[in-house]
Image 1 (tube, rainbow, N blue to C red):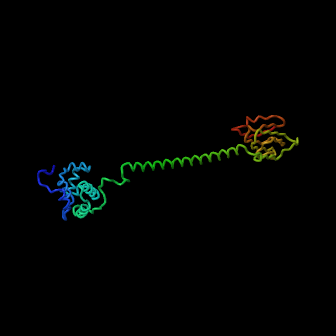
Image 2 (cartoon, rainbow, N blue to C red):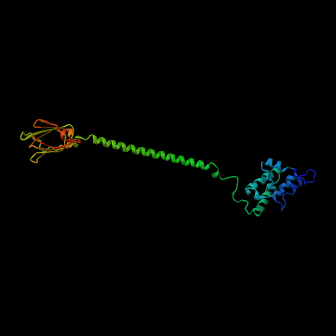
Image 3 (cartoon, rainbow, N blue to C red):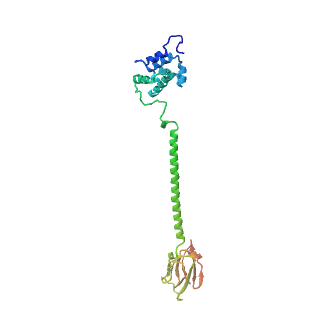
Length: 262
């Protein structure tokens, strides 16, 4: 105990009636009230759930060892309420002397406050990062979906074009027969086609008997020897004067270019 119970102390009623003196400091006044009530500082600190050092600093008006003014005012109000004294005069006196003691205004910013801004609490950055990761993930999914859609459209268009090339219409097959004569004069040549291909046939006189893309049977008449070129020899069956001619000896990489005589 700080107070000797046997010593003569001012009564609580005398202190309360006198109130806060004109030059008395808030902490000093509250300490006098506590002593007059014969209260131990440790017991008061426990009741107020406040560290003993903080309560001692309040009673000694050592503001530089305490948090910001806002918290000091809160401590004073709690202490005054506990001692059953008016806190208004205490806060007013505190505002008067705080700036002189610390060089700070009673309402200055809480730079060293134990209460931090919510945006700076541990874990808030983590939550913000999670939101960004989620947004990036969604954006990647959207981009992938768009890319897949574009690739699908391109593939479908490509397949459609291939089908159009594989299945040409009959009108695309050009049949050029410059001399499909049935005359029996000269040598007779017959060409049958399993599928369309380009041919070029000239007789010994330099006459072009057939040229271009052919698909139907050609019956040609001219003077041998013949200059023959077939772009796809596998598609052609050829006979000269009713004699079947093998094209394999003249075929290289599917093409045949040779001179034929009777």
